[in-house]
Image (cartoon, rainbow, N blue to C red; front, side, top):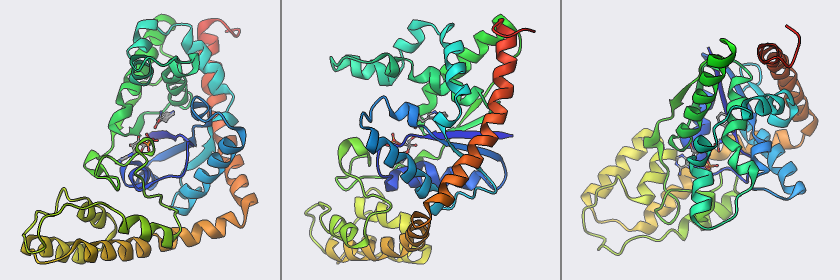
Length: 322
Ligand code: ADP
Ligand code: TRP
């Protein structure tokens, strides 16, 4: 079974990205044929700075490898290194209904705010469909927010198959565990757009300061509290070993503690949790050629598959001789 997903290089990854998506992608590499790519063509719809886009793209490769993505198990590549995908995108675009794309939330939300949208944002789901279909992917692990795009992909593949014969494998979304919804330092969902993130590869001292600044409620210390739903506890639960997590939950339920104490425990647990990936990342960053090599090997493997699929599609629709 082919599993495929893409990650946009739009800035430093945060705890939400890791626990909500990346950790789960990496877990799939052991049992499935996994293809993971860095969606730089998609990111270009929002990152309009060449130096930044190049840097973010390379940084995500470092992040994924440091977090345990194993290039011997999973294929890691950069989206634009497989130009077949852009060509497939055009072929899909020719039959993509305007109405279907007008209903897609990224475009719709921007329009609703009275902002002007580019054709790139409008066609974003078509490029995503090409990403998926180019590799005969069966399963696409994504967060809930992306399910609509997988539905669009299925619609486009279905109507293409209906028209030109069975050319595309019909993919399915595999919705990631959304109980892993990670709160930001303000208690809202952690997100780059809310400016409330804890970056995975933050300097430990800076991270400690960010944690110490988390705003807490003003209930009296002695009051017993329900741990789940409390920002500090929820973040602690992600990075603390099970026994410590249980002890912390018991302390909440007993009451008689200060949030300062919890913040310190959270900062300590976070520092320990990220210590190894941070060391691995520093080691990789010192050998950028090794990373480039991994990406080049991944792209070669991905291109081979995409070329085969594109050839099949071109023949089916009369672009190439049968
Ligand atoms: P952001 O909201 O910071 O821009 P993205 O939309 O780029 O993050 O997120 C990429 C993926 O990371 C999403 O598909 C989602 O599955 C996951 N993710 C992001 N934020 C969170 C969060 N706070 N909790 C759980 N998962 C998250
Ligand atoms: N749109 C996805 C996101 O923002 C990234 C993405 C691009 C993707 N192409 C994909 C995800 C193909 C799954 C499959 O998170």
